[in-house]
Image (cartoon, rainbow, N blue to C red):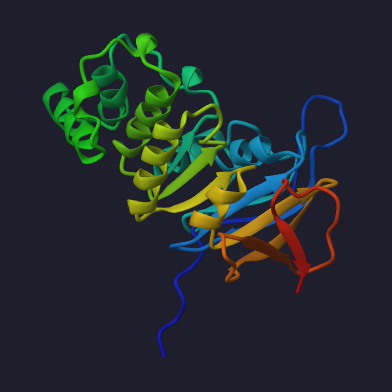
Length: 254
């Protein structure tokens, strides 16, 4: 009998926050297995972005354990390899794109991984072509539309060939065309993902499991499709959790 592969990311008892304030996360557990697409739910201020930053080491946990890719991560040096293998796409693309042109932004990561300039630019062009974004390569980044910036920021992360994608509200502010293009791109990707989302339709299309952050704790749930005359998704949580689901999502205790 074949053993199950180990989790890609495991958080145990995570406590984290800002300065002397009450912790935003107060004992959160999370397990992301290969192939899973976890949607991260919760009210504004529940700690969704904070949790992604704990995984990548940008915000240190004051208690608990971060285990990523088979190793416990504690120091800044430990997290450097995590940031390569778990690509974080920020909520605001302007926080991620800082080079003059698209090709420079997408090549930046491969250059930092040790590729030569020629190799990095070929990696960048190949990544853009694979996403049908090759026509943007020589565009000035700050002149892109919001949707184009979002897609380019994902290309910049994918150029580093991560094993996990961490997506912080990827659909916010997208027009219908950009929304559809982003959805098609993500659906075709093989990586495991953690997606911060408030969009019920987006969740229904992608998520295989869910974690609701409420009162500093995490509540694991599963996502089930139910046949209706329209698309309809429910999140089923292991315990009775009320009061902080996005509009359009139903909660059913398991």
